[in-house]
Length: 283
Image (cartoon, rainbow, N blue to C red):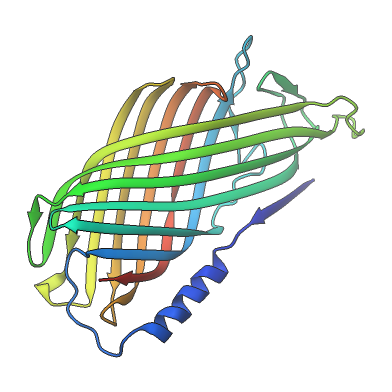
Protein backbone atom coordinates (compact mmCIF):
# COMPACT_ATOMS: atom_id res chain seq x y z
CA UNK A 1 0.00 0.00 0.00
CA UNK A 2 1.36 3.38 -0.92
CA UNK A 3 0.03 6.90 -1.08
CA UNK A 4 1.91 10.12 -1.55
CA UNK A 5 0.93 13.69 -0.80
CA UNK A 6 2.88 16.71 -1.95
CA UNK A 7 2.54 20.40 -1.26
CA UNK A 8 3.53 22.05 -4.53
CA UNK A 9 3.05 25.73 -5.33
CA UNK A 10 5.22 26.00 -8.41
CA UNK A 11 2.54 25.95 -11.09
CA UNK A 12 0.60 29.04 -10.00
CA UNK A 13 3.68 31.27 -9.35
CA UNK A 14 5.11 30.34 -12.74
CA UNK A 15 1.84 31.16 -14.52
CA UNK A 16 1.51 34.47 -12.67
CA UNK A 17 5.14 35.33 -13.39
CA UNK A 18 4.73 34.76 -17.12
CA UNK A 19 1.44 36.67 -17.25
CA UNK A 20 2.93 39.62 -15.37
CA UNK A 21 5.99 39.62 -17.61
CA UNK A 22 3.83 39.91 -20.73
CA UNK A 23 1.66 42.64 -19.19
CA UNK A 24 4.46 44.78 -17.77
CA UNK A 25 7.16 44.42 -20.41
CA UNK A 26 7.96 47.18 -22.92
CA UNK A 27 7.42 46.50 -26.57
CA UNK A 28 11.02 46.66 -27.77
CA UNK A 29 14.19 45.00 -26.52
CA UNK A 30 17.64 46.49 -26.14
CA UNK A 31 20.94 44.65 -26.19
CA UNK A 32 21.50 42.45 -23.15
CA UNK A 33 24.72 42.88 -21.16
CA UNK A 34 26.60 39.99 -19.52
CA UNK A 35 25.94 41.39 -16.03
CA UNK A 36 22.96 43.13 -14.43
CA UNK A 37 22.88 45.73 -11.68
CA UNK A 38 19.88 43.90 -10.23
CA UNK A 39 17.86 40.87 -11.28
CA UNK A 40 15.06 38.73 -9.86
CA UNK A 41 13.98 35.28 -11.03
CA UNK A 42 10.93 33.29 -10.02
CA UNK A 43 9.26 30.19 -11.39
CA UNK A 44 9.22 26.40 -11.14
CA UNK A 45 11.97 23.92 -10.27
CA UNK A 46 11.42 20.45 -11.77
CA UNK A 47 13.57 18.70 -9.21
CA UNK A 48 15.06 15.30 -8.55
CA UNK A 49 16.07 14.58 -4.95
CA UNK A 50 18.07 11.35 -4.64
CA UNK A 51 18.82 10.74 -0.97
CA UNK A 52 20.36 7.92 1.05
CA UNK A 53 20.51 8.48 4.80
CA UNK A 54 21.67 6.66 7.92
CA UNK A 55 20.42 7.96 11.29
CA UNK A 56 22.31 6.65 14.33
CA UNK A 57 21.19 6.67 17.96
CA UNK A 58 23.46 7.26 20.94
CA UNK A 59 24.00 3.52 21.37
CA UNK A 60 23.72 1.91 17.93
CA UNK A 61 24.40 2.58 14.27
CA UNK A 62 21.42 2.84 11.98
CA UNK A 63 20.77 1.26 8.58
CA UNK A 64 21.26 3.23 5.38
CA UNK A 65 17.85 3.84 3.81
CA UNK A 66 16.82 5.22 0.44
CA UNK A 67 14.12 7.86 0.93
CA UNK A 68 12.50 6.98 -2.40
CA UNK A 69 12.75 3.18 -2.46
CA UNK A 70 12.21 2.56 1.27
CA UNK A 71 9.85 5.38 2.25
CA UNK A 72 8.30 6.58 -1.02
CA UNK A 73 9.61 10.13 -0.56
CA UNK A 74 11.31 10.50 -3.94
CA UNK A 75 8.76 12.55 -5.85
CA UNK A 76 10.99 12.63 -8.93
CA UNK A 77 9.98 15.14 -11.58
CA UNK A 78 7.60 17.14 -9.40
CA UNK A 79 7.74 20.93 -9.60
CA UNK A 80 8.26 23.29 -6.68
CA UNK A 81 8.51 27.08 -6.58
CA UNK A 82 11.82 28.95 -6.46
CA UNK A 83 12.90 32.59 -6.19
CA UNK A 84 16.32 34.22 -6.38
CA UNK A 85 17.86 37.64 -6.84
CA UNK A 86 21.23 39.21 -7.68
CA UNK A 87 22.69 42.62 -6.84
CA UNK A 88 25.87 44.19 -8.23
CA UNK A 89 26.55 47.37 -6.21
CA UNK A 90 30.01 47.77 -7.82
CA UNK A 91 31.11 46.94 -11.35
CA UNK A 92 33.04 43.79 -10.46
CA UNK A 93 31.25 42.61 -7.30
CA UNK A 94 27.99 40.64 -7.33
CA UNK A 95 25.90 39.11 -4.55
CA UNK A 96 23.07 36.61 -4.93
CA UNK A 97 20.43 34.91 -2.77
CA UNK A 98 17.79 32.25 -3.40
CA UNK A 99 15.22 30.01 -1.73
CA UNK A 100 13.07 26.98 -2.44
CA UNK A 101 11.20 24.52 -0.24
CA UNK A 102 9.83 21.00 -0.67
CA UNK A 103 7.42 19.05 1.56
CA UNK A 104 6.66 15.39 0.91
CA UNK A 105 4.72 12.73 2.81
CA UNK A 106 4.02 9.09 1.96
CA UNK A 107 2.58 5.90 3.44
CA UNK A 108 4.30 2.69 2.37
CA UNK A 109 4.59 -0.96 3.37
CA UNK A 110 8.29 -1.54 3.85
CA UNK A 111 9.92 -4.58 2.27
CA UNK A 112 12.85 -4.90 4.68
CA UNK A 113 13.80 -4.46 8.33
CA UNK A 114 15.94 -1.43 9.14
CA UNK A 115 17.21 0.67 12.05
CA UNK A 116 16.46 4.40 12.09
CA UNK A 117 17.18 6.81 14.95
CA UNK A 118 17.32 3.98 17.50
CA UNK A 119 14.08 2.33 16.33
CA UNK A 120 13.69 -0.99 14.52
CA UNK A 121 11.15 -1.04 11.68
CA UNK A 122 10.14 -4.58 10.76
CA UNK A 123 9.69 -5.80 7.20
CA UNK A 124 6.06 -5.74 5.97
CA UNK A 125 5.03 -3.05 8.45
CA UNK A 126 3.22 0.04 7.14
CA UNK A 127 5.09 3.30 7.71
CA UNK A 128 4.10 6.93 7.36
CA UNK A 129 7.00 9.27 6.58
CA UNK A 130 7.22 13.04 6.21
CA UNK A 131 10.13 14.99 4.81
CA UNK A 132 10.63 18.77 4.59
CA UNK A 133 13.64 20.44 2.97
CA UNK A 134 14.18 24.20 3.08
CA UNK A 135 17.04 25.42 0.90
CA UNK A 136 18.65 28.85 1.31
CA UNK A 137 21.34 29.96 -1.15
CA UNK A 138 23.84 32.82 -1.04
CA UNK A 139 26.93 33.61 -3.09
CA UNK A 140 29.49 36.26 -4.01
CA UNK A 141 31.32 36.64 -7.34
CA UNK A 142 34.29 38.86 -8.07
CA UNK A 143 34.11 39.49 -11.81
CA UNK A 144 37.85 39.63 -12.39
CA UNK A 145 37.31 39.69 -16.17
CA UNK A 146 34.46 42.05 -17.03
CA UNK A 147 34.16 42.61 -20.78
CA UNK A 148 31.43 43.99 -23.08
CA UNK A 149 30.16 40.55 -24.09
CA UNK A 150 31.53 38.17 -21.43
CA UNK A 151 32.51 38.03 -17.77
CA UNK A 152 34.46 35.53 -15.68
CA UNK A 153 35.42 35.37 -12.02
CA UNK A 154 35.84 33.33 -8.83
CA UNK A 155 32.73 32.43 -6.84
CA UNK A 156 32.14 31.71 -3.14
CA UNK A 157 28.80 30.08 -2.37
CA UNK A 158 26.87 28.76 0.62
CA UNK A 159 23.77 26.56 0.54
CA UNK A 160 21.97 25.99 3.83
CA UNK A 161 19.76 22.91 3.97
CA UNK A 162 17.17 22.57 6.73
CA UNK A 163 16.09 18.91 6.75
CA UNK A 164 13.26 17.42 8.85
CA UNK A 165 12.41 13.73 8.47
CA UNK A 166 10.01 11.66 10.59
CA UNK A 167 9.02 7.97 10.31
CA UNK A 168 6.00 6.49 12.18
CA UNK A 169 4.61 2.95 12.30
CA UNK A 170 0.90 2.76 11.39
CA UNK A 171 0.44 -1.01 10.99
CA UNK A 172 2.72 -3.77 12.26
CA UNK A 173 3.99 -6.66 10.13
CA UNK A 174 0.73 -8.58 10.75
CA UNK A 175 -1.44 -5.70 9.55
CA UNK A 176 -2.61 -4.71 13.03
CA UNK A 177 -2.74 -1.12 14.22
CA UNK A 178 0.50 -0.30 15.99
CA UNK A 179 -0.10 -0.12 19.75
CA UNK A 180 3.32 1.18 20.73
CA UNK A 181 4.37 4.67 19.72
CA UNK A 182 7.40 4.24 17.48
CA UNK A 183 8.66 7.43 15.92
CA UNK A 184 12.07 8.20 14.45
CA UNK A 185 13.02 11.78 13.75
CA UNK A 186 15.93 13.64 12.16
CA UNK A 187 16.16 17.43 12.23
CA UNK A 188 19.34 19.11 11.05
CA UNK A 189 20.78 22.33 9.67
CA UNK A 190 23.47 21.58 7.09
CA UNK A 191 25.49 24.56 5.80
CA UNK A 192 27.48 23.50 2.72
CA UNK A 193 29.94 26.00 1.18
CA UNK A 194 31.51 25.83 -2.27
CA UNK A 195 34.49 27.51 -3.94
CA UNK A 196 34.52 27.80 -7.71
CA UNK A 197 33.85 30.14 -10.59
CA UNK A 198 31.17 31.87 -12.69
CA UNK A 199 30.90 32.78 -16.38
CA UNK A 200 28.44 34.89 -18.39
CA UNK A 201 28.33 35.39 -22.17
CA UNK A 202 26.25 37.41 -24.66
CA UNK A 203 26.81 36.22 -28.26
CA UNK A 204 28.22 38.92 -30.50
CA UNK A 205 27.89 41.50 -27.76
CA UNK A 206 24.48 42.55 -29.15
CA UNK A 207 21.89 39.87 -28.53
CA UNK A 208 18.65 39.03 -26.75
CA UNK A 209 20.29 35.86 -25.40
CA UNK A 210 22.61 35.34 -22.46
CA UNK A 211 24.38 32.17 -21.38
CA UNK A 212 25.89 31.38 -18.01
CA UNK A 213 27.58 28.70 -15.93
CA UNK A 214 28.64 28.29 -12.32
CA UNK A 215 30.54 25.52 -10.57
CA UNK A 216 32.25 24.73 -7.32
CA UNK A 217 33.51 22.16 -4.82
CA UNK A 218 34.42 22.06 -1.15
CA UNK A 219 35.70 19.52 1.37
CA UNK A 220 34.15 19.94 4.83
CA UNK A 221 35.65 18.99 8.18
CA UNK A 222 34.24 21.27 10.87
CA UNK A 223 31.22 21.89 13.14
CA UNK A 224 30.37 18.19 13.26
CA UNK A 225 30.30 17.75 9.46
CA UNK A 226 32.88 15.81 7.44
CA UNK A 227 32.51 15.27 3.69
CA UNK A 228 32.48 16.71 0.19
CA UNK A 229 30.14 19.06 -1.69
CA UNK A 230 29.87 19.54 -5.47
CA UNK A 231 27.87 22.17 -7.36
CA UNK A 232 27.26 22.94 -11.06
CA UNK A 233 24.80 25.03 -13.08
CA UNK A 234 24.40 25.84 -16.78
CA UNK A 235 21.68 28.10 -18.12
CA UNK A 236 20.31 30.35 -20.82
CA UNK A 237 18.17 33.50 -20.69
CA UNK A 238 16.13 35.14 -23.44
CA UNK A 239 15.07 38.80 -23.21
CA UNK A 240 12.48 39.75 -25.85
CA UNK A 241 12.00 43.00 -23.87
CA UNK A 242 14.48 45.36 -22.28
CA UNK A 243 13.87 44.40 -18.65
CA UNK A 244 11.79 41.22 -18.82
CA UNK A 245 12.68 37.80 -20.10
CA UNK A 246 12.71 34.06 -19.45
CA UNK A 247 15.28 31.69 -18.01
CA UNK A 248 16.04 27.98 -18.14
CA UNK A 249 18.87 26.20 -16.40
CA UNK A 250 20.00 22.85 -15.09
CA UNK A 251 21.43 22.74 -11.57
CA UNK A 252 23.05 19.88 -9.67
CA UNK A 253 24.38 19.62 -6.12
CA UNK A 254 25.91 16.54 -4.50
CA UNK A 255 26.40 16.39 -0.72
CA UNK A 256 28.21 13.38 0.79
CA UNK A 257 28.81 13.87 4.51
CA UNK A 258 29.14 12.22 7.90
CA UNK A 259 27.42 14.30 10.58
CA UNK A 260 27.65 14.42 14.37
CA UNK A 261 25.24 17.18 15.34
CA UNK A 262 22.60 17.65 18.02
CA UNK A 263 19.69 16.83 15.70
CA UNK A 264 21.38 14.31 13.43
CA UNK A 265 24.16 11.76 13.83
CA UNK A 266 24.85 9.55 10.84
CA UNK A 267 25.53 9.72 7.12
CA UNK A 268 23.87 11.65 4.28
CA UNK A 269 24.33 11.10 0.55
CA UNK A 270 22.13 13.73 -1.10
CA UNK A 271 21.76 14.78 -4.74
CA UNK A 272 19.64 17.84 -5.51
CA UNK A 273 19.29 18.38 -9.26
CA UNK A 274 16.78 19.49 -11.86
CA UNK A 275 15.59 22.06 -14.40
CA UNK A 276 14.42 25.55 -13.43
CA UNK A 277 12.06 27.50 -15.70
CA UNK A 278 11.03 31.03 -14.84
CA UNK A 279 10.63 34.72 -15.56
CA UNK A 280 13.41 37.30 -15.12
CA UNK A 281 13.29 40.99 -14.28
CA UNK A 282 16.54 42.90 -14.72
CA UNK A 283 18.13 46.32 -14.98
